[in-house]
Image (cartoon, rainbow over all chains, first blue to last red; front, side, top):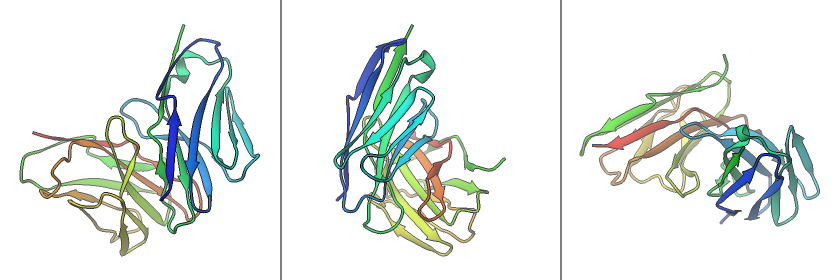
Length: 111
Length: 111
């Protein structure tokens, strides 16, 4: 059974204070690791897909990295508009395209 | 605009009543999914469909039913057998092997 654990559950940063969110996973045959951003009362918004260890992707102040056991979402010089819940999900080789999600990290960036 | 449309945004269910949540996509995606989100828990898969007229149970299918008569539509019925239906419901879709995209969600409350 695929499993995803995200930490910390909640993170409070000052504007400009860089940090990282962690996503640890166990999966049978990783087909992809996904990061989504979710604002309150909204559907998740796709950010990145990573397919193999060593891969990195960037978008504005966000950078996602992947190893064989975990992924990190690095946030550089965050702004208040980066406040959201960040979800990590894995797609395993067990058939179908379904994703297994972690419980998310709730990020709040303050002025 | 292309996307996934869920309706209604808010729905109230009385005890013993069945309710249906609508999900329509105009992305020409083959696969569609229903997830349930509860506070403090990750998204959990209810049902998914990879092609028209075919669907499979996810991790928490009990008390739910679906149909896939058209490629663009995947309605979810929450039956009276679902004992704790109050939650945020998310519909998603993708083309095989590609990123899964989400709708804006529907809130269901039992009154």
